[in-house]
Length: 286
Image (spheres, rainbow, N blue to C red):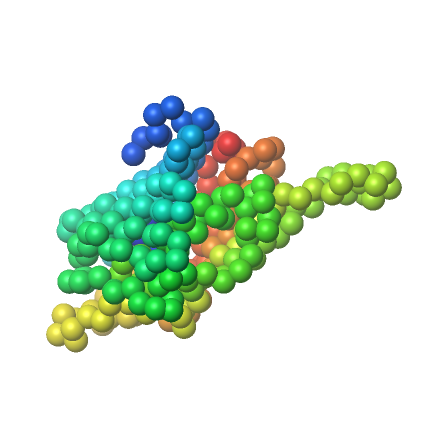
């Protein structure tokens, strides 16, 4: 789900994903607290912490599953992206069903990603980066940072990207929806510069591009979208919240919607069970 997209890959075990305190002396700080709900049922919570200083930029995402989702995906995690010039350091630390997980990967432009640490609840070894896809691979949180930056720079919300999280690789397509200025008609008549901000950046994880570490058939692992025979129907439905499956997964990052100057005012994750909505816990986020 969303948090796993952001934290691992990120935002609640999902979302989720997606995903440290602010750097000392940081010039700019933003913090967003959000709850994730499906039909008013709380499925998780996530905190974004973004900071920018003279030498580096940091994005931290802290989240956990909640409610009925916790019965099928009991996940707590913290993701951290540190950008310093052409080098991105991606770290994920969490617990999945009580089992500790950690991933630490270095991404440097023009080089294959370097997996420095890897411990996963269901995979014994990481997926080895390879050419040609590894040379252009993005860390999950680096792509989330690009989406956040696209609010003010719409050209960033465009293109097709290969994402690598240590366990799997997949492709994501970004497309943007321009903000409709409230003064658009006036701008036309008075030759004013129209708004260049985005109302929304949509990311689509392409299910047919997903490739992950192969698991032994004896361990009973199943496809993410499949339930286990004999499970209650409610449990099977919650399993469909999982971000990685056979079909495409869409996430909308919403920058407008009545929040003047907000960096992020909401997130929508389109799962087979319906739309899961991440909303700020206290008014607009800026």
